[in-house]
Amino acid sequence: MKKFLFWFLAVVITLGSAVYQRKTGPTHPLRGKVVVEGTKIKYRLPRSAETVRDAEVRIPAPALLQGYLDYKRFKTEDAWTRVALAREGGDLVGLLPKQPAAGKLLYTVNLTGGYVTTPVAGGKPTVIRFKDPVPAWVIIPHVLIMFAGMLLSTAAGLAAIDKKRNPRRLVLWAVALLFIGGFILGPLVQKFAFGVTWAGFPVGFDLTDNKTLIAFLFWVAALIAGRKGKPARPFVLAASLVTLVIYLIPHSLMGSELDYSKMQ
Image (tube, rainbow, N blue to C red; front, side, top):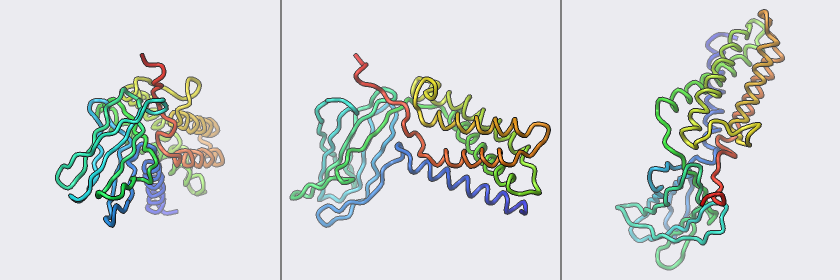
């Protein structure tokens, strides 16, 4: 396989999996369309917000439309609270009260032209999670290094298939990048955002942490199998495929969640 094609495939596969993972995650904005009394409305409902301010829900809507949102704390017996959407130019805007880190709210949005009330997103409640701000000096290197680790992981898998290439050097880079991004910068990001450094096995069930751990263990196995310069192609290919499958799982699924019943 020629060098250009080799790296082109590695980049395309990595970018595709990264975009898919991000867009299917539970914190990615929920997008869609709804028809309200003959008017088509495109909506974008936030599913992640910071604890420093109330979360804004903004719906582009013509002047003839009005609306309201209902919200309550996630997994509680709270009564629903209703807030009228305020008109701001061509938008209807409502605010959801800020919550502590890892706190979640359920909310629905309804629009009306005066005769029929139409629920947005089919009336199914949307979940929004709050997090503390994460400094750019932590989050940017974390994202870049994790992406680089995924890229080198994919490249190592392709090299394991190509008999003319020895994947050993790529394996070393993949292990190093996944360790730095997943076990040094990742816990820092989580500490800033939710106040915990590790929520995966054996202390919790955070899927993102557990995905990182599983992928890293497979790469450690490939690293050991390839000692003394051996290509260890079956181990490298297995580690690369497992990493690809793992990172196709939506990001932040089963992430940190505040238990309101334990709050005073």
